[in-house]
Length: 179
Image 1 (cartoon, rainbow, N blue to C red):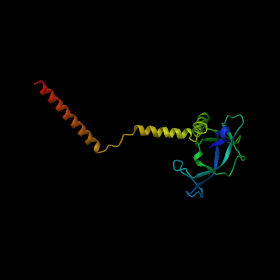
Image 2 (cartoon, rainbow, N blue to C red; image 1 turned 30 degrees about the horizontal axis):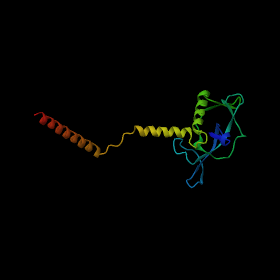
Image 3 (cartoon, rainbow, N blue to C red; image 1 turned 45 degrees about the vertical axis):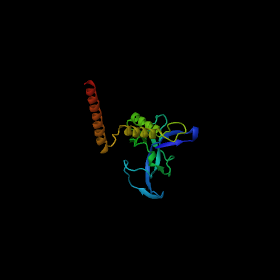
Image 4 (tube, one colour; image 1 turned 45 degrees about the horizontal axis):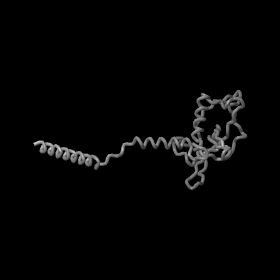
């Protein structure tokens, strides 16, 4: 999950791994419908909130090994819109730790997703992700074919017919002037 830590010029962005303890869906009125059992991740996430326990990185593991920390468990409801992904962790009962599967690939993906949540420029409200979405929409608009209107082909025929008449008139004038 993505977090902005601090504020203003001192703000930094970081991600934390968490275990979902409860999901809640808010109604449009802002009131909570209460806990829900499951949600579709490719569905509408607006209004869905998550309560989580946070994994703590093991010292010296370079963010590859974690313990499930009770100190970072909280009851705050965080918007599910801030979830960056679903990393896969393997548990070792021997060491009571969790290790990221395919560590380097997942760390790179989490870092890249985190960058998308960051402002494009200092003080900007628009994130890199929003900028990327806007660029995609702009490109789609540039490649759209305008809808064909029934009047357009007729107008084109009329212009073509008028051009032919003018050309015929010029040819006739040239022929008459030569005679």
